Length: 213
Image (cartoon, rainbow, N blue to C red):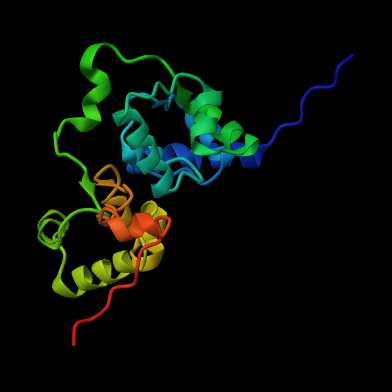
């Protein structure tokens, strides 16, 4: 005879508390796998192919950088249609994926609804190539912040949103406000001069430039 499963009153209390938090704050961020499971039991689902940044940020361990990557993948037309696809693109551990699984819904959206997150129609700003004037206008930067950004960019191109946050010491709120707004293309290469005849005679080695006196 199988013994009945033990009751867990603490878990019932946690479930009731989460239900209250979700009623008071629908954007409540789930703290761990247990809260994700309780949210799923109460009917919350994350539509993978339609969810916006705020929805993804509710998942434990889903950083702004990961959300920005998701938005870029969707902009590029990547079909995030299965758990293993999501895991591969976000480099999720098995434990992270397992924690998210109860609320993930991979149902394909109908019609143009998949592009809801692009409703603003604003093109992304290419952070490593944009002019100072464009950076100032699009990011609403103060002069001191703009100078710091340009100085850091001269030291090396920004790799992603996390790199930008660390190098400019941005707050979590500032980073979240940039999700889906930036590109991080390699900077344009400096033009190279064609080889001279003398270079060809020297086997392609460039001669040092001699200053005129």
